Length: 321
Image (cartoon, rainbow, N blue to C red; front, side, top):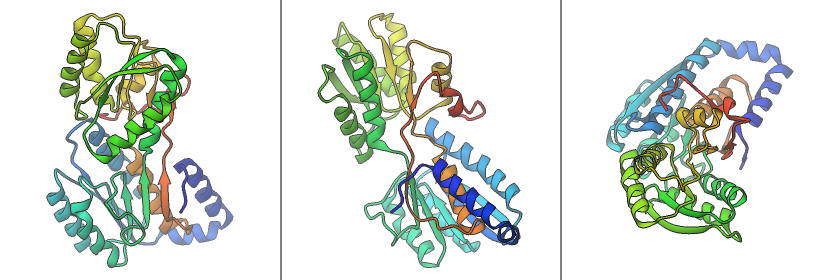
């Protein structure tokens, strides 16, 4: 299966279209309907998913005159299954879906795939994630998100005493934690404590308050999510603690990217797990119809370390996240 970033894939699509301009013109009038099913904006990251899905739907329809993109949001798995069925009734050529909870949605996704439609699965994979249920899988790199953060801390603050705020006790959380442990392996970085913050800024605030009470000296905080970093920073500020050198979060929220851009000492870097990955899946899906190039397999996006030097490339000021 293919494993690449979207940037590399896009270069290939552009080259293919340029090589046969007459073919590209012939495809522009082709009628294609793409359904996009995503979770409702119930927290920061999913707000970003909705923003990028709606943004790129408009761009794609402007680019391809025969294309219709229908974006539907759902608050839970049951509602999303109904939304997928509603989309299917409209005669889908393709489905792009970021499941709220993948396994309960397998049957609905399978029905679309069995109808002959192209299926692109984003981020959250079911227990069986192969070409029997989808044509394309686009996701962030969970192990690398943790490993990149761990490597940065080990290199920047080699003797750091670190507290960790995890997400939820689910597989992707463990992948991130395992990646972090790999990133600091062989260094003198010491992990003082690890607790779950449920990818929620209020819960992370309370966990950080507990850490600040228990440990008189903390050098660095790693939290798996930028929403949680907001709560962490607030707890540190309220406690007036000056021993903490910096916080490393993850996802690439506009607020954290802006802090990196501005040289904020408490947020020197961030690690990408971009909600824009849904847009990547939509662009690749449209390319499979209009650019006449094969799009299939697995596309894993890089867990890029965002620094002051490159932060501008990842800053979307109009995004809610």
